[in-house]
Length: 84
Image 1 (cartoon, rainbow, N blue to C red):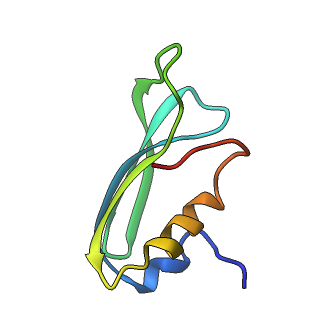
Image 2: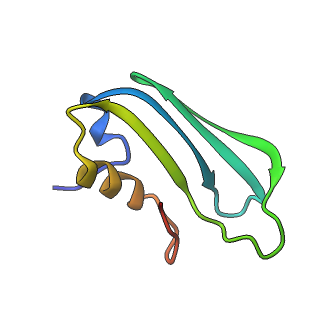
């Protein structure tokens, strides 16, 4: 069964925040979610020269399946990308 990035949305996510690196864009992208409302927007901050481009997310909720959430986001990574 294929896992889509938001296949975990049926879980009870209260809040999600993080920073994402988007391929082809030098800006950091801010991820925010409250329940089933998700937003990813570019920030005015660019990745510093030599700074590792990685994604970092914090998910707060109930009945969360960490393996499923991680698999959903890892499915969106560019080859060689990291998620912490």
